[in-house]
Length: 115
Length: 112
Image 1 (cartoon, one colour):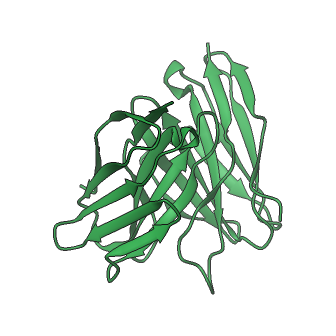
Image 2 (cartoon, rainbow over the protein chains, first blue to last red):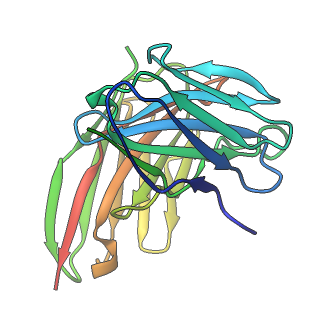
């Protein structure tokens, strides 16, 4: 069974630009959540999607947004990039529903550098 | 405020030795507590999960304990191996929504 796939793995942007990251969950998993990981703050929850609807949201500004498609694939977008947005962005999927223990299955992440 | 605190921040041990990592939390309502292992440049991988009623859970050389009364957990690694070098992250899930709160992690280095 394929794991969670994130693209791109690495990208470099400049301040003011926007970026879109993609995540394909494990087959059969219906929830996708996004996280920001930095050395200073550790892992922080951005938002979670299920059935193409945002179910939960962390404490991040509106520049961070996401969406989920009917096949459960998800994208997140960061607009008007700031230097502080440089981070590893992780996507995780979980079953959601029968058999769900809340276990998160993470992808390898997208490393964003903002210059 | 829901928080998860881990200690120590970093740890260096010799191969073959045991070690214990600590996690204290204030997340409420509590659903479950997980320990994840994150290798450098990789995504975190779940090691153990414990719910409110569980005190101990083992996964090979990894043994996690939970004291729900004091809101403390520990991860004990037995007979460490070089491949145990990684960051170990304690994650507490909020009851009802499973929204996770993460600790900052303990960076473990195992030397030969």
